[in-house]
Image (tube, rainbow, N blue to C red; front, top):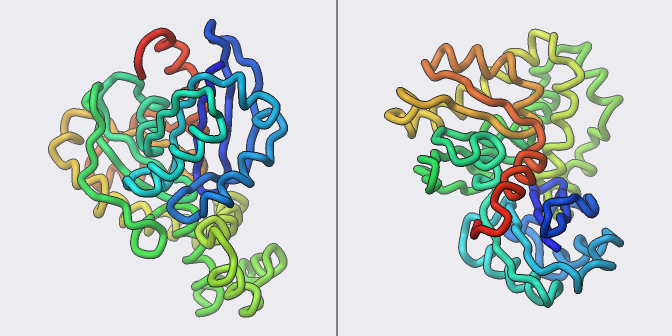
Length: 287
């Protein structure tokens, strides 16, 4: 049994395939980001799925792609946990940028961006994936991501930079007490996912002028700081986008792309489906 996993900081999708490529089960847990969760917390999240518990001994191969797996120490800690928990499995752990590449372009060249809970950008030549900037996470980077937009919404609410009608709706949708916000940011795990949960408000108000301007502001920062790192590559290759923010902000992405002179290619909301198809084609071959 082959287990293919695509994990962000908010949620983690797991799909099991037979050696013939038939889907055996699909399940979801909370996000498995080893950069911000302890090994104990990671195992607790695996055990949120009865399918994973019941099939742990039958799984012989795991391809895990996730946020927080771009640096060696968190990646090795997660690899060790998965190898121990699924004791009969050979485990491969890669950063979520690899999953985005496989889902968006497969083995074709292109610049691929992730806009989900976090954000990132890379270039694939069809064989190898290259990054110009190492992500430092939600505190210092992650422009145009769910957590970046969530943070901007909360800031604009408190600084009264949000239009009054939207401030009223925002306060009805979320607990905006200062104690609640600080508790979730400084006392609870996954503050980035907490911030990103507020970005849903954007999806519900896409036609508001304030929201359009906010989306463009984040996308301009992301384009300037991340996409333009690949200034030579974008001259001859399209820029592809993966993640929920990408899906809902597609219209603004194309507007900003025109400003920065790059061509938008595929926009993929959920990479897990493309990831599974990629591995179906590769069955019997090394990933």
